[in-house]
Image 1: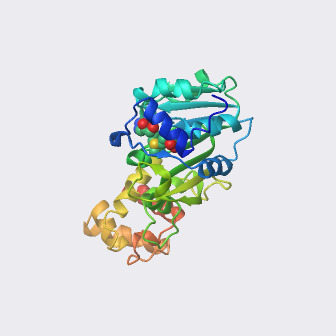
Image 2 (image 1 turned 90 degrees about the vertical axis):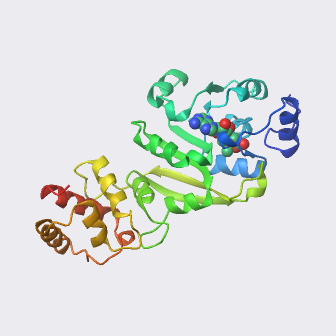
Image 3 (image 1 turned 45 degrees about the vertical axis):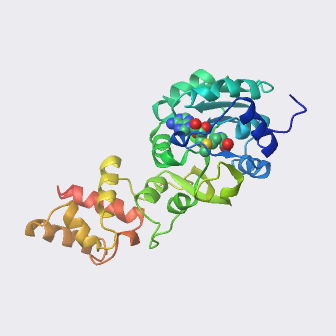
Length: 297
Ligand code: SAM
């Protein structure tokens, strides 16, 4: 086994798929990465060291898992597809610092899993994954909603989603997803990846995004995080319309309400005619807080 090429090489991936009769499942977003340089660059982008605990989401046939096992202290990999569990058991047998669990990440109790599965749960916890693209946003939202303090979340996703995560105000990619990430983390695109290095090849190109905890706390705190994001989503419901039109849909059109909203916008020096994508996170929070104080939200 130790003389075999690494799992992520095209030849070894083909051999494993043939030997175990693996047919990739579209329903689980299975596109296996077959480029050792890309795999090693992902591990570098996540800055994995032997002091780190790593959670991998969706190990597939173990290409990234193997690279992580070589770099990290311990790796816990969560795979939803039970057909891949015996395969992973065999191909990762040379690594005694890897545990594979048959688990849907969206159903996992992550704090409990971390306590149960890692020898030393106090070490930095990093998430590294080539995500199943059909559930990229729910997975990210789940990770951010969990009380775990992630040292880094380094994940591959569809390039267009990566651009939304890292978008600046005023661009067409900027929206509620950008703001939900910015609320907790700093996001940057580490590098892009061609669709050609996957088996099977998806219809889109990909990018690696690295999320790290915010270095500076937000200047203002929202009165209620969930209500803030409900409000933000409402404000982006009609992107081509002005903030004012969106606010009327979210808050109401009653003349007394409109008067209060106008006063709040004037006080915050926000033009009603601005498009929602021009507003920064701090402006959205200030606006939501003032609307709440006036019993409008
Ligand atoms: N890590 C492998 C690689 O890079 O070649 C496979 C990546 S593939 C894009 C996504 C993987 O996530 C598949 O193995 C798929 O079965 C798994 N997966 C899909 N939905 C999942 C879920 N809800 N929980 C855990 N794993 C999931």
